[in-house]
Amino acid sequence: MRTTLDIDEDVLQAVKEIGAMRCKTAGQVLSELARKGLTPSRSPRVRNGVPLLPHRPGDPILTVERVNQLLDEE
Image (cartoon, rainbow, N blue to C red; front, side, top):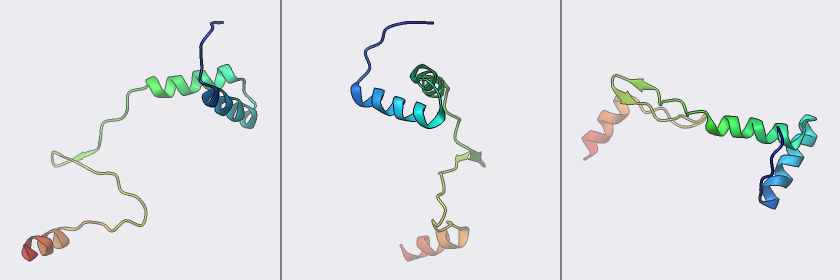
């Protein structure tokens, strides 16, 4: 389907670069990105009724022992 859109120059350039790397047209790349943007984000994981925060590799793991230690320091 053809349509005309006003797209910021930097966005168009990025789309063209992605398209060149993936051997896709700018329209195909924009459609994929739009679909991803329109997909509802996943709900955060929950344990015992509490949302879990994201954990990055290398971050220390917060244990019950560490929580108790911090509470004792108060």
